[in-house]
Image (cartoon, rainbow, N blue to C red):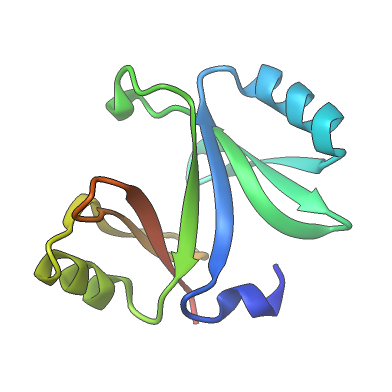
Length: 127
């Protein structure tokens, strides 16, 4: 991962959640020439997307708990402290869609919704 993406306030990751991982991988590989690396992360299959060996995002199967959620891209913004940022978002009229939680050996994240209804993921890298 590029060190510049770890700066608070920067978009640091883009993630596609879809029920057709194979189709998405084929589409985006042909569309943009992205390199793809498959792995198992926290017990689930995950594909990391790369450009010139720089990690830029990932693709994963829609989790069962998401129900009938349509395929969508999600963006992550780097913050110093996910828990403090989640609290600040609620103080400012936002809400928490996914509460702060750990991604083992990677960092911590949550998903917020701004007062206008747009969702965004917040992420702090493991130190």
